[in-house]
Length: 287
Length: 247
Image 1: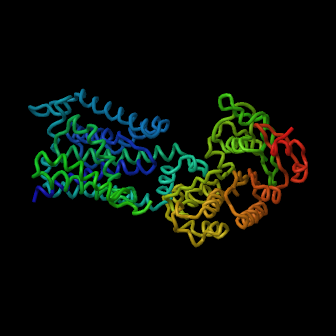
Image 2: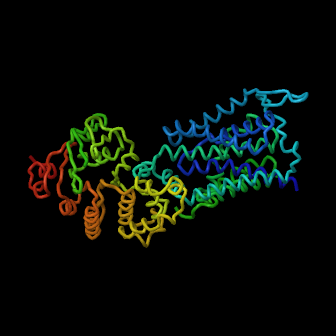
Image 3: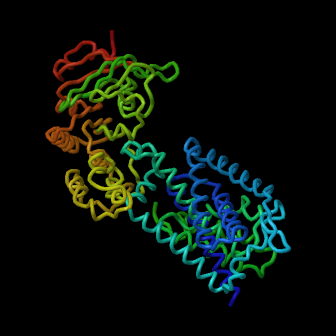
């Protein structure tokens, strides 16, 4: 049973990662920096529980704030570039953050062992859950509280005027400005909300795997972040969830028995899914 | 109300608008006509804030517009439509109007949270009125992309009105319309004036321009070559030459 709980944990965390890109994609911005906000959240929450002895809930609050702040900081310069240029700029930021953690040492002695991030070795022993006796099931529930909360907030945004404005900006920035939309505020706010969600996701990720390192936040993770909402469709948040389940449960785990053939089929099935449902799994049927 | 003084906009060597003096008084309907490429749309874009002036100045109600971004100009009450329709095509008709509610009145009446995170209930009545005015009430839940051409034009006008403008810049609103639709547009424009909205009408369709405007300015190669009542402009030899060519 633990296998399925573990699977559900992974799906919950990746849903948060996908949702963080979902809101940014609504404004027409393709951000490859989501893995970086995820990493910042992961290291922040891990350091707070391990080194500072915080409880996980305030630690996640802090990682969400730091994720939001760094996304806001990226959002302003990102306004100046669009399309492929934005992809490259955010990719560079993401790699910068990854390399920062590759070189980041901050260890303190705890009893007779040293704990904390240690450069390329990564950050081991993020053991808040086992130390406090949480079972895999408890952790899964805990993760899903946040995943469902993020889905609920974004669902609410989608029904509000804010959601309509985000989509309007995504469709035609000039027309949106011409009806009085402040482009800066809208785009940066979407980035910030996305950063907050990625920060929480990262904090949860650090704790359920108990070990993070720079390569946990590479370009592949950034690609997954934008692939989920694109494969799932931008009509609503359930598309992202469906895409995470499709990719992680079906493609990654379900096809594990195929061995080396899996990777080949993985790509082929995504291409097939996008051809059958060009607007995403949950997208509109007609353009 | 609106005053352009020696306004110029050059694109490289092209003087799209060149030393244009142009005034609009409150409550007027002013036509802006001229051959293709004469700088009419550029003039509208300068007022709306799409790009900065090369030289000269634009003031609106005494306020210099130069450094104001587009959304700030809208808050002063300047709204526009586009020559090539620019709707939010994957939003519904209703949502297109909802997104446009950014006027100072809307800000004052509803708090930040109600305005941004509120649902559709609170604003249903105002938007219903606009839909009624534009004859789009039956289509409110349709995606904008699925509307017929004439309906898209009407929706774009309604979207500009949703911003509660004081000055409305219409960039070729009758392009591609049949004469019945032009008649409807004409009566809408006159209704808007009776509501106190000042209008600048850029248009090629003379049937419309001559019928609704109080005054017309004629542009050619970025410069104003004539200005006056529709009758005066029609009789002007320079205008005839610009349109018909010849010696």
